[in-house]
Image (cartoon, rainbow, N blue to C red):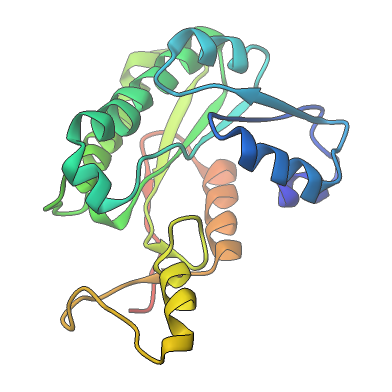
Length: 210
């Protein structure tokens, strides 16, 4: 939102849709409550709400996800409803409303997935790619971006490390685990680059350091 509001020309309208009203309030204050921003409480599981939100919209960045691996593993139905079914709703609403471009935020865990979270994201990627077939000769085109852990994002392991730091002991899942870190600025760069360059059907994957 900060990056888009700083571009010239600024967007006529920028809509933030989520079910997290507290996070919306925090973001609203942080941005200084710009006049071009609209704040929608809603859920990707609700197709009717998405249709309302997408009315008159040119571009959609779909970042909604239940992304905690453990939570998804113990609540597979909820992970499916948000990550996969919700993505299908985004596709349908975009097609119904004549949205020009949709960028879906995927995850490196969608590749050779071994977890419920990864599987729901992998299926969502397939839906996004095939959304271009559903569109036919219509105006809407879909692509995905797939990257690793965004440093300091909500739910990031860094939050755990920060809380553990005073104890002098950090817990890790497994010494053999490899993580691919991405600063949030680079994540935004990738999304906006995909939005600019996409033709439809791509999965953009950056080269990331382990």
